Length: 195
Image (cartoon, rainbow, N blue to C red; front, side):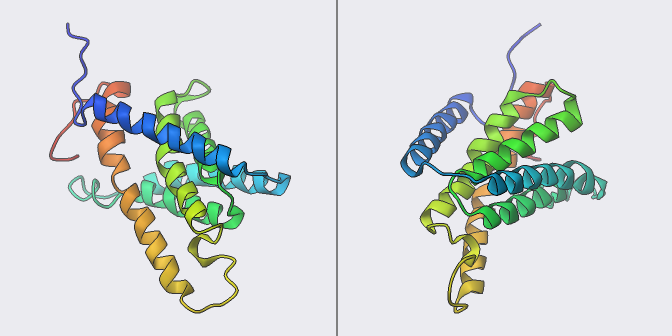
């Protein structure tokens, strides 16, 4: 019996990504040193938990034929929508990583009980959460035009920022989740066509 797990994405590529993403996250958080208020933490906690419910309950209720599901994935779409809204409410660097961590911890409790899987936590924090934090950083806290004093171009800015975040987030599920972590955690044999 072989203990080698076959994955779609080469393990050195995945490790390199998460090392670089971890360094970027630490650098970003040390540079900005976010100061969350109690209300910020409350919003992030509730938003992260709502993202878990939107993903694991509401999204999973929507039945789609198997061929459509890798492209149209309502659970992931609902997760991202709630995380986008949550981070847009708080608008501080670190809020994406924090909300993604809450999402993952609540999602683990829903799926696995108290014993969760740390690979999902690392993945969610250093992909979806980090992407949101980078957008907050580059927009100087005005993500999706929230906080802009003029309404000129806010819709266009929101569409562009949402498009960028949606684009970079679209690679996470096929490359990291289904291409690497699911085969390791669940022992799934990957299907290259589905990924």
